[in-house]
Amino acid sequence: MADPIGTILIADDQADIREALALVLRAEGFATKGAASPAEAALLLDAGGIDALLLDLNFSSDTTSGEEGMRLLASVKTVHPDLPVVVLTGWGSVDLAVRALRAGAADFLEKPWENVRLITVLRSQLALLRARSTAASLTRPAAQGEIIGTCAAMRAMLSLVAKIAQADVPVLITGESGTGKGLVARHIAALSRRRDKPFVTLDLGSVPESLIESELFGHARGAFTDAKSDRIGRFEIASGGVLFLDEIGNASLATQARLLSVLEDGMITRVGETATRRVDVRVIAATNADLNRLIEAGRFRRDLLFRLNTVEIALPPLRMRGDDIVLLAADCLTRSAARHNRDVTAFAPDALAALAAHHWPGNVRELAHVIERAVLLADDGTITRAHLSLDPQPEAPFERMTLDQAERYLVQRAMAEAGGDVEAAARRLGLSRSAFYRRLSQIRT
Picture 1: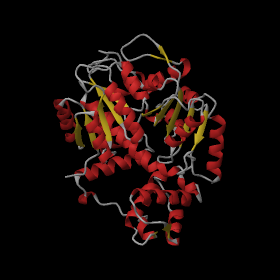
Picture 2: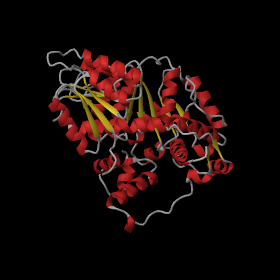
Picture 3: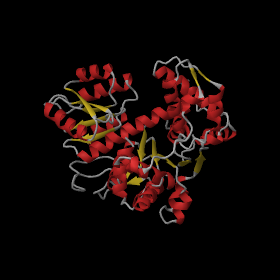
Picture 4: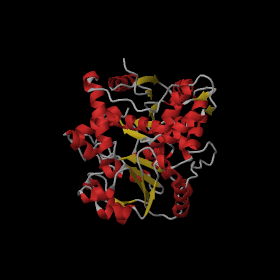
């Protein structure tokens, strides 16, 4: 049996709800645990091994305040600040959901839930958690969360960030996959006047096109078949703070038009409504695609690019950062050794030479994975070149691949050849965008 995607703790007082959710999640490859009360949930969380919490806000059938769930949420975010929490309630209101999101919940779902959205949300949250974990090596252990980087390109980037952080204008962050665009976005927000306000993220490359407008702008009850209640979008959740839109190059032209309108007048309209609502949001967008080439191909709006790149911050690839590679590797070593309780403290000279010579197509994310694996393999306290396993491996012929392995290989190669552009990758494989999304979401877990 394959390893589970992740372990989800389902905290709900109703046994039938817990079992129904567990059945859906297990069918999709998740492992589950159940808790019937906040106290039981806290015990299971303290025992460890939980990757995300699906939390009902009302544990008593005769209450609708959500206070039991809110108290547990506050406790969880204090003790387990990085744990994704998705709130779930059949009794709550939009206001209650907003309270939960601003208290640290990652997302929310209404009962009766939509299975597709349930799986999409949890997959996205686990992917984000893992991305943050591997990208954590880009920051120093120091509390201020400084970004590691002494090369000229990083010094110039940090200088630019310091200049524009206080200016309340849109920012476009560009760079290859794995360079730390999300971390830089958080760094900008932390230095800005909105530092104490919500920081909300949405990866436009991981949300099906049919759900993007609802995710961004919210929807009214009855707006479409599965819209069983009102739902607020990321713009409203982020109001007063920062909205980070990752993989902006994957937005459809229709979504781009809506985004342009919001950037121009600060007004949004929920799907299925005609009334407009004002939002006060600073937008930071990121992409690993060449937006000018997308404009030439008719797949990105030039006027939206002008709005987004009031300030553009370009992150250098790791291979261009010189001695930063060793600094980052040392930080990865310290973190991985502590995380796995391994007495590994140094690099052998041949390992340092190999790190400096490697091309690093996956950038900092790849470096973090390489060092973590080496920490687990090292047996005398020192990482050698052999532990790094950096020599390229020949591609396995299709005859030796299972169907799943071949599909994973083709999807990953198409994404690499398309520079992360989902639509272009889908065209290379002769798939519709929705069909390609399904396959991409499966291999990202």
